[in-house]
Image (tube, rainbow, N blue to C red; front, side, top):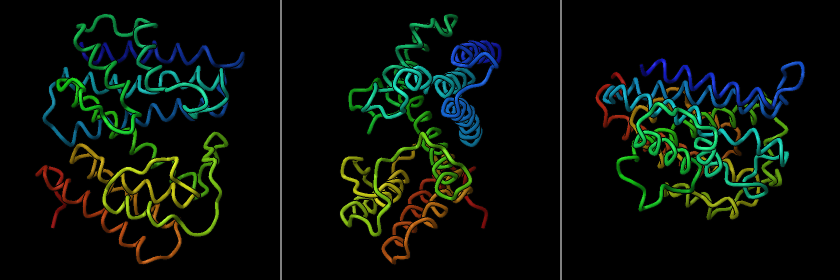
Length: 268
C-alpha cells in the first residue's frame, strides 16, 4: 500500500511537471535542475530513514511524500517570475504546501497524515521551525529540512567547483576578497546566518557551515561526514586558520551528533 501510494504520487508529480515542458518534452534548464533536485531529496530521505532504522512504514511514507512535494511550487515560480528567489516572487514553502491541497494530492491518505505533509512542506525552507509547530509533525519537518540541506550542499559544491553551471543560482553577492568577521563568528557558534547580513560570496559559503548545527538526525550527520560536504566547501574558501577552525568545529558537531546513533558511529 505504501509503495503504491508513493508510486501514484510520483506519477501525479511527474504529470504536473510535464505541464511546464515544451512541445518536444523538454524542461527549461532551470526547471530540469529543480526536477533533479527533487529526486535527490527523495534519495537522501531514503538514506536517512535507512540509517535511523526506527521509523514505521507509515512515517517513512510521509517522509518520502514530503521530499517529493517540498519544491512543488518551484515550477510555477520560475514560469511566472523567472527566478527562484522567494523575496522576488513568493515563499515557495508556503505555496508548495498550498498546492498539495489545490492539486488534490494523495487523497487516499488519512487527513492527519496529509496535514503532517502540508505542515512539513510549509516550513521546510523557513529560517527555523516555529515554536508553536505541531509536535506530532516535527519528525517529518526535520526530515525534509535535513534532506533538502544535504542536497543543496551537494549542488553548491558542484557549482563552486565548476562541475555544474547553473545560471539560476544568483547569489546577488560580489565575489570579492575576504569575509565579514561577524559572520564567521556566528557560524562558529553554530547559529544560522541571516542572508541580508552577507556582503560577498565568501560570507555565503561561511554561512553554510552553520548548517552543521541545524541537522536533526544522526544519519544526516553521517551522510554529511561521509561525503565530506563541509570539507569540500572549505576547499573553495581562502586560506585562514579561522576558517580551518570553522571546518573542524562543523565536523566535530556532526561527529558528536552522528555518534548518538550506534548504527551511525564511525568504525574505529
